[in-house]
Length: 281
Image 1 (cartoon, rainbow, N blue to C red):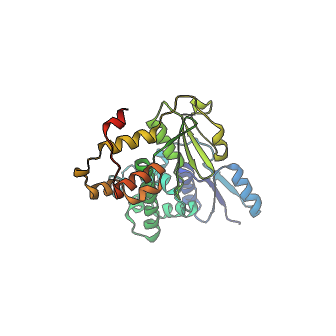
Image 2: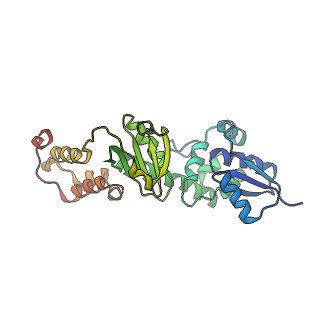
Image 3: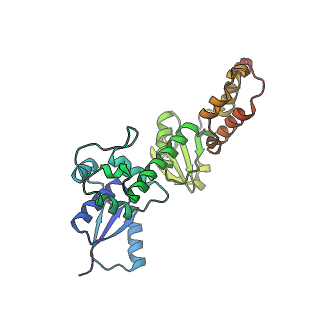
């Protein structure tokens, strides 16, 4: 008898459902896809003719119930900063090196002990825990240091991360700026938040090449210039703590946006003379 194939969507629900299926049919092979079109393409390319069970492509399951059935109700984390099991999976899947099929097999090998996801007692467990932390650090770095600019009236920022976190950052940025349309450009994709101001869905994505055709008529704020003047006017040279400033504005932040690069330059080289008259004038 040919082995069964478990096809799953590479999201939290799909991973959890694939775990349930694999525990019931441990000899099955795993196949993952981002949607049904990609799944059909993979099946056509590989000539798969085995029995196939597809899970996760229809959002009909409560993920918290799936987590409890796999790992019980007890919360397990290495530290208070670590997410729950659902958040752990969500972050790991965004890592550029994540293999969803390997993740499913690793979770099944935990045999219901969620501590194994966080403890790093096995090489695979340690790898995926580090993946989760890497993605979390990248996201928080964007939240702290990315400085959006106005492009055609849209609060916009280009992110340069090896991990797939553009949509996460866009949701955060649009929540911080509910009165403006927001765009986060991630490689070929432009994530749009508060899209209702542009006649789009409130949260959606388009190709980056189409982004320049969008515009918002609200009066443009010179955020960059305003921040520069405020920053310069408040910096008192005799009270300047360079070491503390370098800690708050680390060198790595200069690669996130042009404004961050200017801030870092001021930390290292100092600032020009500036008074509050420049800020109010």
